[in-house]
Length: 174
Image (cartoon, rainbow, N blue to C red; front, side):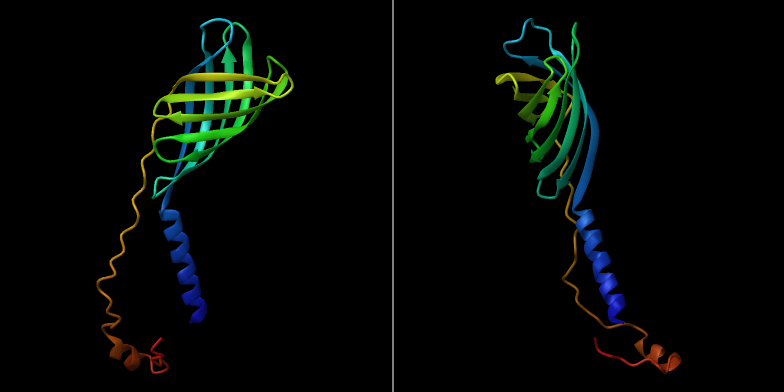
């Protein structure tokens, strides 16, 4: 009996924990202008973001992206962590610039259809700030499950029938 209660409690805890967050997995695209670059043509960035949104609005997860520089080809490959809330998220991580043949560190912020940040090219010691527009929007916060604790009656109807039809049953009052 104790084993089944333990299994039931564990299952309830896992289902409750799973019900208090939602997964948001989505591809995204953006146009990003790099300050100090030659020309006004933006880089085209495509990527994929996977985050968990908690019932308090906290967001955490990761994103991966690749950028294309018109006239030059593929440029930056990035893998970033994502933290924040449903409206604004910070990103941080690393990657590689195919055009510069350099590893990079990156940090940024994403809001409702806006993105800004900076890439630090490690080998050249150069910072490349950027800003742009993105398809990423804010996240819907999942609702906490409602538990009615006002009614706390443990009486089971038909209890006497259980004793009548199952004489080996003993009420343990547990």
